[in-house]
Image 1 (cartoon, one colour):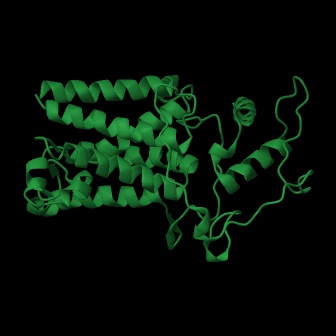
Image 2 (cartoon, helix red, strand yellow):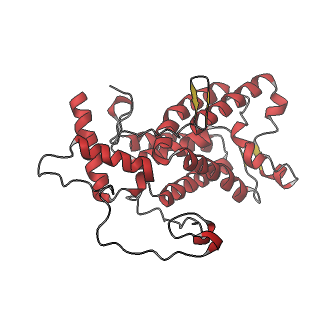
Image 3 (cartoon, one colour):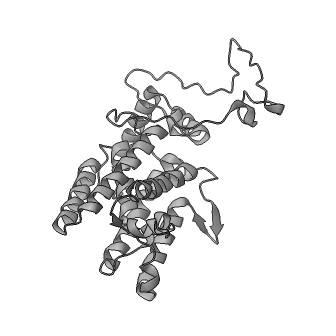
Length: 296
């Protein structure tokens, strides 16, 4: 049985990888892991260069603006071993979250988690660095997407995520690094706001949903766009074409059949998991649990 179990089987489309290196599909997660390994090697081989990457707000105010982006690569002198564990952990969690968000939105998610907390912290005296500030919000986000999923020792995923956050906070508090505690909560807040806006944690009502920027109709994208930036009038049709997705009505007590599951996965591949209605998400989770129970 897999170490992590999730209610929905992830769908992998053809465009998951940005590119290939031999047989290796370079996804957003692989890029992050590669950068994490690079940061560890840089600390071991060129410590003076590694010191130039971590986030230090007073140095950013003096003009070292690259630290706003490079700080996850700044490995502390005594954290090489834990950084290696963090990178491995990020590989496991990142793959799952990338399957849900897709490669582009996962890259956007990571970019927001890295840049926005650093920009907000720049006017204050804050210092931070390390890939664990990226892996932890990924873990918390995944736990909110699948709160009843099981992790090590059959512990619910949300319990493990809460435990990891508590340990991190206690460790920082013990070291007197209150600025990094604030930075950690900034990172987590940005991560939750992003996931809520992406529509993957709709059930988490206590996180506000921010509107995402949309393309204008005159941009040449979408069904309402036409050449010259003018809107085309769309005609309503009484009956949709036969090839439009229509989930079959499941029989009472039968759950979701394999045919409907395949169609739901096709819909996720075409439009993303947020395109599913709450009822479709419920039936998808039901089918996934049944398939997992049959494997067990």
